[in-house]
Every structure is written in C-alpha cells, then in structure tokens.
Amino acid sequence: MKTNLSHEFYKMIHQRSSWVAVIVLCGLMLYSATPTAYITKNLISQGFGTGQWVIIIMITLSANFIAMELKNNTMTTLLYKSPNRWGVFVAKLIVLIVYSIVLLIAGFIFTLIIKAVLVNSHFTWQSIYHQHTLFNSLLLNLLGVGIYLLFIITLSMLLISLFKSSAVVIVIGLFIGFLGANISALIMQTFPGIKSIIAWNPLNMINIITQLSNSRVIQSSALTNNELIIGNLIYVVVFLLIGILVFRKISL
Image 1 (cartoon, helix red, strand yellow):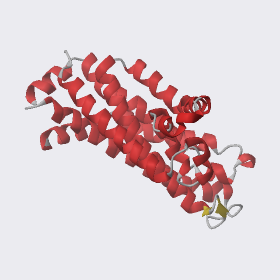
Image 2 (cartoon, one colour; image 1 turned 90 degrees about the horizontal axis):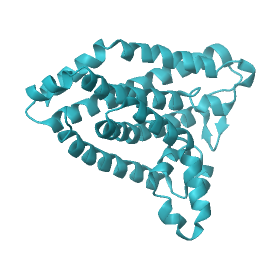
Image 3 (tube, one colour; image 1 turned 90 degrees about the vertical axis):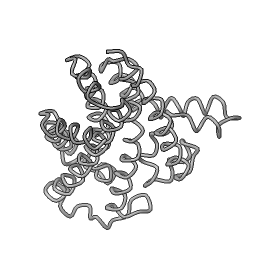
C-alpha cells in the first residue's frame, strides 16, 4: 500500500492538470465574484462557488485518473507490479481525497482574498447569516462540501471502473450534482407517505453542502444534519466496497 500511495502521489503532483485545476478554480471563483455589485452574503458564505467548482473538478479528475491509464495501457503494468488490485484502487482514492482537501483549502484562502479586495468591509465576517456568523457559515459550507466530496469521488471511482469511460462518469456526476436535489425533492413530494424512507436516497445527499449552515434546508431534505452526514458516509462505504469488487475484476 505504501508503494502504491507513493506512486499515485507522484503522478498527481507531476500531472499538469493537477496544477491547472487550482488556477481554474481561482479563475471560476473570481468569475462568480463579478460584477461586485451582485456579491451577497450567500455568495460569500458559499466561498464564491468554491463547492460547486471543486465538485465539478473532482468529478472530472476522478474519472480521468483511471480512464487515462486504461486508455494508455499503463494500468496493466501498474496492476502487474502491485500484489493486489484493491491496494491500487484505495491508493488512488486516498490521493484524490487528499487533493480535494487541497482544493478546498485553496478555495478558502482565495475566498478570504476576494472578500478583502472586492468586498472589504461591506459585509463583515461577524455579520449574521442563517443564524451563524458569515465566517462560520463559510466554514460549515466547506465542511459540507468536504463530506459530499467523499461521496462523489467514491461514486466516480466506482462508475469509471464499471464503464471505463470518463465522459459517462462526468455526465452522471454532473447530473447528480445539478439535478439530484431537485429530483429527490420531487420524488418525496410525489410519495409523502414514505418521505422519511425516500429521504435516504443518494440524490438527497448533496443537501449536506448547504444544510449545515442553513437549517431551513431540512424542509426539503427531510433529514437532520447528523442523518445527512451518516447517509453520506454509508454511501461512501457502499461505493467503496462495490468499487473494489468491480475494479478487481476489471478486464484490461
């Protein structure tokens, strides 16, 4: 496992897309912050879109992390040198999770910079937003994004092992990210009698991104904060176990 991890970290560090992604994230956040006349407390608490941009970036990177090696036939050599396939899968997963944390930290730092330069004292960090200070709302939202990233990364790893197509994984990932919460809410409204059961569906888990800082989201998610956290972690374990099983049987 240690050897697999060192190889995967080496590849991630020396991969140009890893560095480009950080620049792209900062550019997209700056784009979200302009024009400055439309900057609101909500936009600041969301880190100028840090969550949605990091999720999109990680869906793409997670899909390509395996797809490129399958396409270039380097996966065969990698698996041949490794004593077990699950070690390769888990090593890739760990590296992707660590990298997603790096992106979140970069997003947090750049949020502070954008806030200081473009907003200054118009909205102070101590101002109240959704029963929290603006700064705490930002931290809670980033925490929610971090939890959901575990969900989406393990799901992406599972899907790429199944379909071996980064395009398919990206489409499914974006579909879940942009429409998942709405579809989940629609299903719960259609079947109110079993709403408490349907609320545990995977599409509903994305509400963790905003609910930690905004208790009103509970009305649409129908789950408490703790239940959303538990639900996300349960799906992470399920996706991880199935992903390992699929990856072990992957044909090269």
